[in-house]
Amino acid sequence: MTQHNSPEETIFSRIIRKEIPADIVYEDELALAFKDINPQAPVHLLIIPKKIIPTTNHISKDDREVVGHLHWVAAQLAEQLGVAHDGFRTVMNCNEYGGQTVYHIHLHFLAGKPMGWPPYQERLKTA
Ligand code: AMP
Image: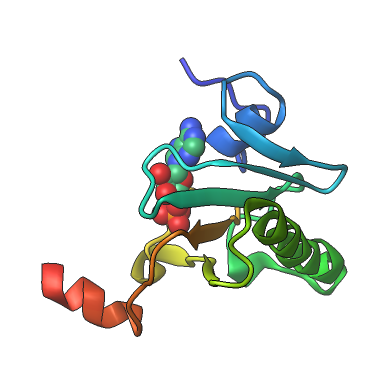
């Protein structure tokens, strides 16, 4: 049974505490990055803050540094993985219409193939 220390906790809190396994590719005092279990591109990472922030709507003025940090981590990983030049996509989904399923903000980092834009056309095709 899932143990949550606070009502805001999700599975990502357990990954941060290393209570459940994840393929971690980066960690520092503010953030963690690991492979998405259901990859939507040849490279699909999730970059998350260690602080629990449920959705983009909950980002406070004090969170600006940590949220900016997630993008800095994305840039480091892009360089490390050799995808900076070809390009990549970072996405943060918010709530139901944004397609959010885990309520601990996370930056999707997708790379390794050209991607379509705008994304809502992709969704209409499968509707
Ligand atoms: P979102 O739909 O934007 O909230 O994205 C949540 C993402 O978390 C999805 O892409 C899932 O595949 C991914 N995910 C859920 N559980 C895990 C897990 N235990 N390890 C890695 N990725 C996960």
